[in-house]
Length: 317
Image (cartoon, rainbow, N blue to C red):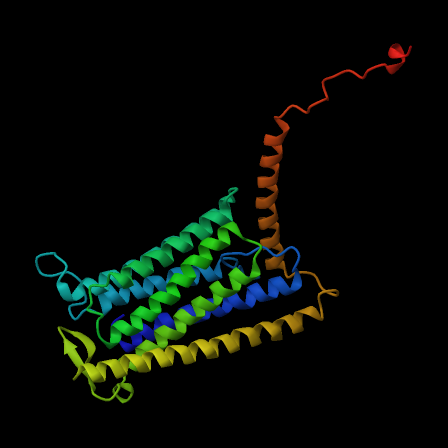
């Protein structure tokens, strides 16, 4: 991941996934606002698990790039079988991809088995995947005290938003706003990965007073003075705020356009097939929970039901 391509390709993947989720959440909510229930992933009409299969494929390619294609010797280990220091970051990046494979695989398995807590467990695994991503970026073996560290610090903030909204979605599955923010945060992750790739590995975009430096096979940006470093970090903060403004304008506008488009045909069309399956699965989960709760209520004795009716005529004087 420590290169332009290593940031741009994962960024495009996150961007596409976030846009896909944002589109489907808005469409589902605009068509059925009263019965909306969030979904951690969305099937397609032809291939139900296309989204999850693409996550598995993309993560597998990322692992191959990090561990077998990227290293100069095309394998990540040293001659004695240990992990060399300059390949620690490759294992950290590949571990993130490994957990996304775990998430997608269990999402498919849970959808086929359909247990009571299918959606909740899928959301939980997704939250763990984002949490691992955050921890590995926070505890990164690469020195992130310089300009690259500022980019990663802001990236961690975005990942935290993804973690929190994914966890909140477990307890509040009917909240469209939570799903909306989570989708936008995934888009922002993708956008920021792409920005990092171009801004840190394109000589024309390096701030004044800073140069690209080769540090044990890892390309980093070094600034000649504290003043130059402070200026470079400030520029990153400004860039982040600009993209935040632009993404907010885009997401709200995207919402308004889709709602206006779908609201005109709500009364004249039913849900698409894939959305109907999602709603059925969600309703099954909710009904099973309610049934379980209702059974537990049935174990209580109803006060007054076991007493015979009094014949008031016997007590007349």
